[in-house]
Length: 372
Image (tube, rainbow, N blue to C red; front, side, top):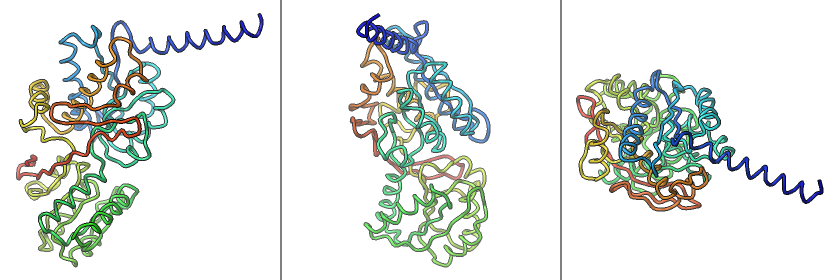
């Protein structure tokens, strides 16, 4: 066999392998989408809500004919919040189940852990629930962010405090990369506004010891406290500040686990403000919300449920643009445009996958619910 024939045979093999790779995404007329998320363990309440939101929308699509006659199946694997299991589950989803895309991973650690796997498989991750800057910058063509970054939330929070003339602002942050980044971002925004960094306290990772932070911040008598930490140390801090006779406005971004905070504080959590990166799920002012409530009526209405619903809806709309000849690469290309999910607008470009800057403020009520 001469060199030309060898080259032809090699190219043919590559072509066949590529075709098999594409066809493997379609199994018996079914298209698989994948998720690894906590379906057991301490974070299961959020993982189950996220999964429920995705399933509700996909069931609705399947009941109405699917995509070009094909059904969409969600393959959801439990990682119990363990990042090592997240990675193993994701490899399984990409290689064994041949999912077209990954949807809505829960939390920063899980989303960051699978980033190296995405370009190898050529698969997109659509709608991770974390607003970590690492998912926005540097640009990653395989990650599609439906929700504002934590940096964007911090800016919205501080603008709200500025509007309320709560000028003296303290910060409680967790001593890790997440907390330190949040502190730097808050300091940068304060410089642009009329706010003054009143005092700063910190808490160690996996610790509820806020004694020194309480003393430092109480001495400053701030009007507001920005909480850049998990629910447990935040709750301990609020309890002790109240015991010290101070009642500032407490405010946090959407990473704050409201149910965990209320579990620790009870009615004392009333009035804590939480920014949100999705419209109020219990509202009715947007077509998206009315559709979510109607379709997901068998599931508890929640922020995480809505986030999953939105990730599924965007994915389906992009698939509809492609038609029957689906592939991971075509899905990425189809996503890179404008979408309106029903009053919630997304704008993706080839060099920018941060689709929205939407934020709104909510407060915790006396019974632990959220209110506008």
